[in-house]
Length: 124
Image 1 (spheres, rainbow, N blue to C red):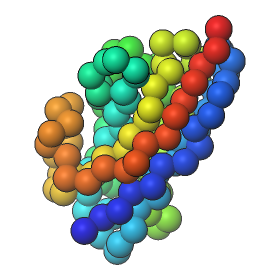
Image 2 (cartoon, rainbow, N blue to C red; image 1 turned 180 degrees about the horizontal axis):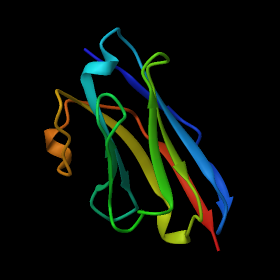
Image 3 (cartoon, rainbow, N blue to C red; image 1 turned 90 degrees about the vertical axis):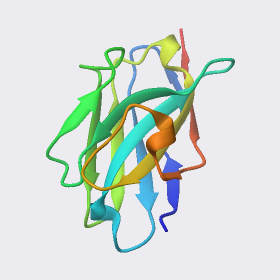
Image 4 (cartoon, rainbow, N blue to C red; image 1 turned 60 degrees about the vertical axis):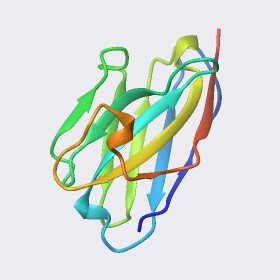
């Protein structure tokens, strides 16, 4: 069982930056691949990016590649989402998710555990 708690959301102007954190409970964090997703009002939840168990591999959606960076600190049971050059269309509730094993997925229904989400609002 893994519990995930996101933090770091807020209101930022276009072009600004935010760093989201996702803290995990339990002693097996390093056995989970982690994903970040987001959901804007009236839209489906969409994949943002993912990171492997070791942190050695990352993958990003085209819409955020080059602007967002995912990292993790397994000693702190935490995964991060650094968001730079933010745009109004990045406004959404951001979620972290965990899936056991070495694979990560774009599809949200493949993930085992989810955080409660944190709101990111980018003003123009």
